[in-house]
Amino acid sequence: MILQPIDFFVYAWLIIAVLSAVYVAHDQFRYNPEAPVMKWGFVLVTLYMGPIGLLLYVMADKEPAPGTHERFVRPLWKQGVGSTVHCIAGDATGIIFAAVVTALLGFPMWIDVIVEYVFGFLLGLLIFQALFMRDMMGGSYRENVRRSFLPELLSMNMMMAGMAPVMILLMMGRDMRAMWPSEPLFWFVMSLGVTVGFLIAYPVNLWLVAKGMKHGLMTVRAPEHQGPHDMHSHDEQSGHGAMAHMGESHEDAAEKVTRPQIVALTGVTLLALLAGMFVPGAFVNLGVRAEEVRSSIMPPGMITTPGTPAEAMRDMAAVDPRKVDYSAPATARGDRVLAPRIESGVKVFDLDASVIRWNILPRVQVAAYAINRQVPGPRLDLTDGDHVRINFTNHLPEAATMHWHGLVVPNRMDGPGYITQDPVPPGGRYVYEYVVQQAGTYFYHSHTRPDRQQALGLYGALIIHPRDSTAEPQTNYEYVVQLQEWLNRDGLTYPAMLMEGGLPNYFTINGKAYPATDTLRMKVGETMKFRFIGTNNNFIHPMHMHGGPFTVVARDGVMLPVAGRFQADVINVGPGQRYDVIWPAREPGKWILHCHIPHHTLNNNVEEKGAGGLTVLVEVSP
Ligand SMILES: [Cu+2]
Image (cartoon, rainbow, N blue to C red; front, side):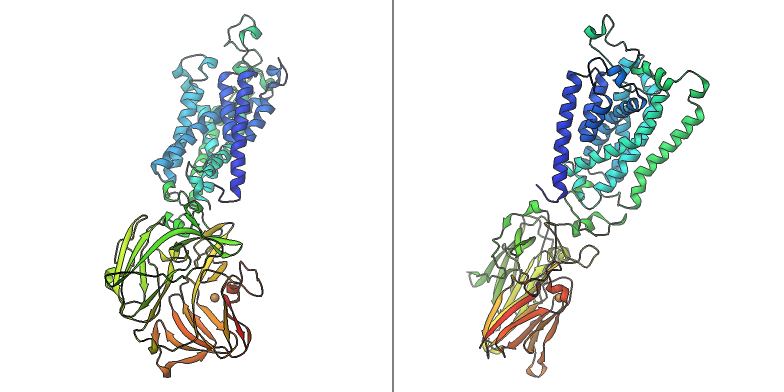
């Protein structure tokens, strides 16, 4: 599934890698007179490095015309390529195998890199060098292990010095899918890591080949091409035997490898290795385990440091689009009144949380945490004294609870997760039951990680009428205003929060941004009660009405005594606050209700039809 624009490139790269490897395998085994171990080396390296591996093969090893391989592969740079290919094939196979296993076993990243190094080194040394090369080198297996140890160490150190930082920094960057082996991005990052490891290991291999300490490319021809010789005998221009001829080297003292050279080179490669493995730890948290963050994509601009725990990453991560289980029609509205079932005098409501696709504008979809497949969740229209039972079912990918904001309820019905109850796990259910003892404007919302869950849409209105309906001020109309901030970028929805990278770019009233918000219609002389609810998480929204002041008649569900009511044309609605205001239509025309933070009346910083976001149009006719 394509979640990010980069995914197109990732899939293309992986397909090209497989096709390239198939071509190289076909060509090597069918036509190219290369030693079997090198044939395998090129196939694996092409699988890991994709088009780069293919390029190396055709430039350095593929016989251009029959009988020319011996001459073609002679240049030192090609021998260096061969040596590096051979090293990388073994090392990278071990590293990738270890990376998959350590991810699945749930090791933290810092253990991953150590296990990867050990596996890569051992596979390179014991299998690819000592075992596969024994035929070429002659001698016993043990002898070959001893002889290969130093070249393998130097080469592997440099390989890992290049590969480790690429793996660590890309895996633990914004898109943590790269940490999990079932994600294509994991394989793409591995591919980039191997490619960088190849480049870093190349100079050392070049030197090792020049000094005759490692193999380069070889030519092995079938007996009919080779005449009476044994298949394993080397052409004198190729294979190990060729080393002595390379670079017109002579067996003189100036060309001999010295102990100081070996010591200095070993030291530098070890330093490079340690730097590659542990310097990235200055930037990312190497204590994170892949399974903790396996599908997290962090918002652009989120600050992660070595001290950022996996839980913080999950908290700010995008909703995984693969978890969406319903797409609401673009025209669907939230805040629908939910009719209760009456069971023995109890009003029973079913609230079901799940991940949905929701249009906040005709062309802008968010992935929302929704109740009963709408944003905001359904409105519960209650009356003071009602006995209610609410069956809360959680189909979200994380545990959740419901809280009845402002209501007096038994403590175990209050909803704060881990405080008054265990959070309801995915697939779980909890029954909230209480008798309503208040009247006014209230709301419900998630109280488990509300900074994430409520920001993604887990809230809805509780409108509670007094037993005596004449006890509240009467108006011609009522309109509930539920606010929300959204962060939606490149098709991914993140919970908007006041953190670096978490700032919202869309704003909605009742789940829609202007111009998709409702248009209210009234006549001059009629009155409208707006019930503002601070269902949003982050900002105080100064809600402003054009066309003259309104009268504030209630705050936080509590009716103000007549003497305490006041007129205003801006009311600051903070998170959790409610205000009931009554506005009389005085003049005909188009009057707008909007937040007075101008950024909140834009859609991703774009003005549409004169406004955006937190704006509602009131059309007053004469
Ligand atoms: Cu605002």
